Image 1 (cartoon, one colour):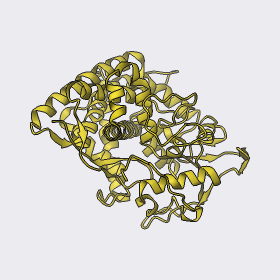
Image 2 (cartoon, rainbow, N blue to C red; image 1 turned 60 degrees about the vertical axis):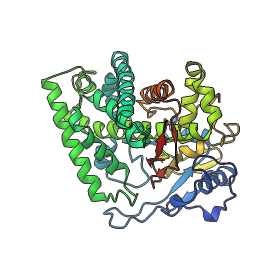
Image 3 (cartoon, rainbow, N blue to C red; image 1 turned 180 degrees about the horizontal axis):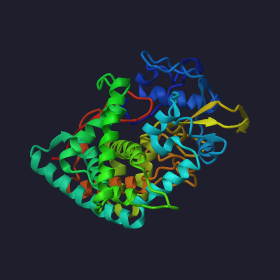
Image 4 (cartoon, rainbow, N blue to C red; image 1 turned 180 degrees about the vertical axis):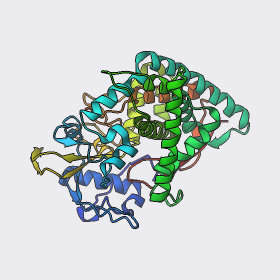
Length: 424
């Protein structure tokens, strides 16, 4: 069975489901889809014990409830006063300082979150976004030109040469990072998001080493832009004054880790999944490419829904409450499984079907599910996906994948490591 086609979803018993087991994430994709369907239908607030991580200095956590239905995920996201982010957005517990170091504002609550988002959003003001969108087109055009010149045989690895290249270049352009440092940035992101995949062999020590290197790089970049501002997002952020406050170099360092990792990884996986989906569904490819402008909006949303690059995020219950009849106690962890919410039959008709004309009164949750932590770069990501496929449509219309992708072993990122493609 193809990694991306789910013609039949197996029935999976509750006793077979353990999200905290690494073995679960090695299971066939259809099995995993069946497991989420079982939870949506039978136990939408299933409790799981947390994994014991060998060599971790932190004790095993108290466990968590899996939130698997779309509307419940939406409710949790849009009620931060009941479901906070400040205790961590990943399942495992870390000290507050480490949460904010790694996750910046995604691991903060108001008023901290509001202050930081207000400042960094200056880098995503209309003027900045317009300039970035022009860069997206020129970068995509150059990428395809280089591809045609470097691979005259018409074959390459789609992830490295196309899907990873565009968002990496755009993020680096945004931040004013020189071309000579792009490979280093790419390496750092792979280490951070490859934790848990044996191929990358990233340990907790590797993670800390790379995070500190990125943090130091960002601090130096931010401090330079205070003294020598340029036409880039780093300068806009570092020199923004909101209610008399500026972004500190330390805050910029943590936000840099978040922006570079999230901005690279989510968009690259959306583009990778999109190419595989269009190959597997030539009727949908023709439907989009033959009327590109009219169908781009729904096509991009459907790619993000189907792929759901970020699999989950966690919140913590702040006070005793109730969610769809389920009592939740203050201090409990709840994990929003976006991949399940985007397959919820209660919201999406025939959710396992890839349909670029799909419209829904309720949006997909691939960029988060509303609320203060909705993805700051969602519009930029949509732009990158649409422009990349427009370039492919115009100049490489026969591009297709030529084999099954090598998938990242991860419970957090629905990632593709490698995927061969051809266009002649």
